[in-house]
Each structure stands twice: as C-alpha cells, then as structure tokens.
Length: 254
Figure 1 (cartoon, rainbow, N blue to C red):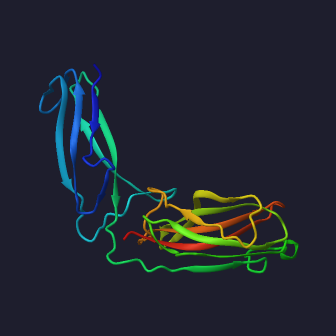
Figure 2 (cartoon, helix red, strand yellow):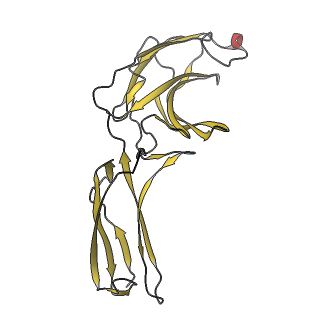
Figure 3 (tube, helix red, strand yellow):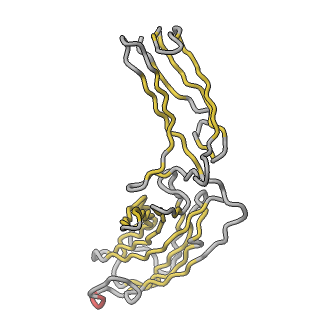
C-alpha cells in the first residue's frame, strides 16, 4: 500500500487573519512505514494535530496573500516525514490564505464622472482621423472595498462609427526594486465584456464586476515593492479604433 501524506487545515476555505490560530491535523495513511522518530507508524490512518499562531516578531507584518506576476505573497505549510534508509522521505506542502487585518470604520466613496471624446484621448497621433464620438458616465467609487463589486454606468451619447463592444479591463501595477532603481509593470487580471454590438445611444450600460480573489489585494506599498490597481473602460469600434479610459483604483479591506 502506498503511503499517503496530507495536511488538513481546520477551516475549509483556508482563510486566516493575522493573529489567529492556524490548526488542523497531519494525516498519514499507510500499511506500515519505518520513520526516524518515533520509529514506526501503525497501519491505517494516523492523525497528528498541529496548532500555531499567525504572527511575526518586531515591526514586521503579515501581508495579504497575493498571486502576481512579479510580486507573489504566499504562505504554505510543509511537513517532512523522514523515513528509514529503505524508504523514500515524504513531503507535503499546503497553501493557506492570509487576509490583512480589516480597517475599522466605513470606506468613503470617491465617485468619478468621465467624458470621453477624441479631444480627451491621450497618446493619439492622428486625432483628426478619429470618428466623432461622445461617451459619458461614472464609476460609483474608485476607493473600493475588495469584498464589494466595482459598479458604474457608461453612456454612448453619440458615435459616427458603429460600436463593436465595450469591455472593462482590470489591471495590476507592480513596482519592484530599491534605491538603485525600480521596474514598473502593468498586467491584465481580467477582462469582462459588458456590451456587445452597436449599443443604443443615450442608454446607460451597467458595470458590475467582482474583484477576483488571490489576484487582488488591498493596495500595498512597502520599501521594496508596491502593488496597485487600475481599471480601463475599453470601447472597440467596427473600424478597429480602440478607445480606452484609465482610472486608478485604491483597494482596501473593511
């Protein structure tokens, strides 16, 4: 019988906050196996309980779990089973999730109204060749609680060219480095199409998107790295013109 080694974290969602107690059993399922200490596991399933607090010493902090491209903040449990010379050592690694301590109080909304025309676009070389259009709207807040949806409403008031689709692009901006120099990279997290085809003019199109777990975290700035977020409203016209409006976001956990 093959020996099976597993780590069972007590909480099914594996989510913990700094200062909480992480606990669960190590499970060993085997017919019989010789180990270094205490000497031998009996046949069947053996459970070894574990428990320890999630805290760090000094002024250090536990940052929230975040899976990025250039910045990764991950927490894992590792259990090594040292076997006798005739058996192969066993190792099991299990990731658990740490959330930052929620801020007290309420988040203050920061609504943003926007107007997009050919004149407001940035980095456009041949502005005169663009079709005429007027897109207005608002985001309900760019100061966002990470557990609540991002909402808003764009409205196409006028467009000479037919609209192909409208998308919402969530972007992470990771800055890494030290005093000698920094590298800043923006990568897409998710892209949601919330309008398809030549939308009706003067009709509000609702935006409602959930921030994806693990790929987002509260906006973070440390000595050596930063993790920030932005959202782009992207309008694609049938003549392949791409219209993009960018909004920086500040994410927090309340």
